[in-house]
Length: 252
Length: 265
Image 1 (tube, chains in turn blue, brown):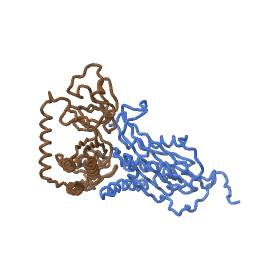
Image 2: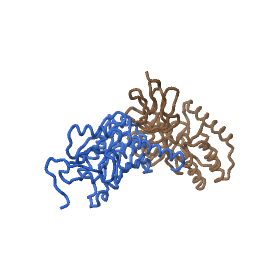
Image 3: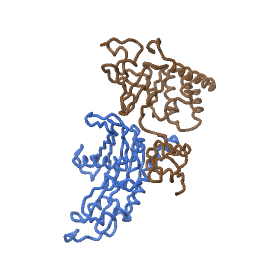
Image 4: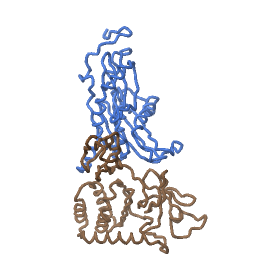
């Protein structure tokens, strides 16, 4: 027998991360802006093997008309994992319960920074597509969407940086990959908590959890991850600046 | 009080959430805001420092309508008493009957005789409301239906560069290629001329859009046009003519237009 089951309640000792990272170290990140030429703004965010593209269209007229709001503009996000993106199992294309939920929490994570009050009855569409996923896809999607919104010249008071924090065995970690999420199988004592933050104010705009964690551990995990959010926001800003630098050099 | 300090240079690209200045001595303008004692950007754009006021000029994004802009629109619907016009922005505009022509239009007349679906018009924005309802007018010098030629879309932020100072850039392209060109503030450009020349004009406009942020652009466009068309361009004369034309338009705008019939190109 390869795996020994643990007694209920006993927390296993997590010795080392599979890819040799530090506990509070993210996977390597690559971020770009302006990757989809036809869109008003676009972003690309790759963290480890998880890859997200985001395209922003708008503000533009909102149809169907009953969704229009005369008080302010609407931010409409659409999250989609491509059918071949996961472990290679065929996935039924089209929206699922999971992707609808993530679309909703993504727009709620972005809305606090975005100012579309000046566009009543209009919509800003954000399309997020993931060609490859290895856990942390909603966070990668939010990061890519932030870059895309900034690139589209939408008014926003800050970038939204997102990363998962959590616990694997007895260790608090940042940016769990799929192997860590599945560590120890059922009852392996893993908590995966995607968090989105407005770095300049420290406000949290997304907080979900899969697994179990104590209140103190949760607070300490978020506190420890704080510098990571600032780091990600800086990477996002550099991505947008790099696009305009490419423009200035005449490469685009 | 802490000493005020600028953290970013003038004419540098800033991105949302970036701290531009610290301290209370500076003021936020368009595209920036104050958070506690710092000033941050809330829009991607080029930083403009005007004395103590920090502003940004957007580099991307959709065209936003404002009063007195001359834009190129496409008729997308015919209403009870006017036309609905797509002006390449988040909201469509309405061309009311009374602002469409100097002709008398009888009640129940067929409005398609004046403007039909898919017609392109050069029009002026007369009003924008808080709900972004837009009215346009055809009454004004140079405003007309645009027939033939081709329409290209450019980034609305680049339009001032395509027009050039007092219209010098677009006049140069017109002069070299002998094309009729209309540039809408909304980023739609109409070019009509002899086929080979028209193509050169399109290339020139795209070149200006691509290199809008660089200096010495006028010289390069002039060189390009001279190479392509073989026409020698006298910049001084072009600038003089463009200025005269701008002054003439200004004069006509001030004079209330009365008997000039519907200006149909």
